[in-house]
Length: 121
Image (cartoon, rainbow, N blue to C red; front, side, top):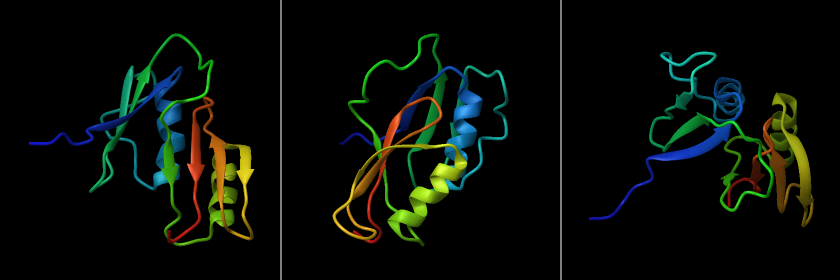
């Protein structure tokens, strides 16, 4: 028997607000039983691990050792980066190898790093 990924977990000062940001990223709603002020909030995309947001008292202080990498499904890398910036992400680094190539490192509203890779690879 093997293990499977149950959650991708995010520590958050405001779990519901951070879950709303990630809901826009992945295009799936926050679980209907979750609401503002909840200590735990989830998004359950079909066919993928759920995203779990837990309230913690401390703020992020160092770089994440594990992070989410996103691959655009229906747009270029640059178009996806622009969309995520519009949702409230921050561009931290752009490792460009050419137009719409390489990867970009972004931060979510609570500073958690994540990457956007080129489409289709």
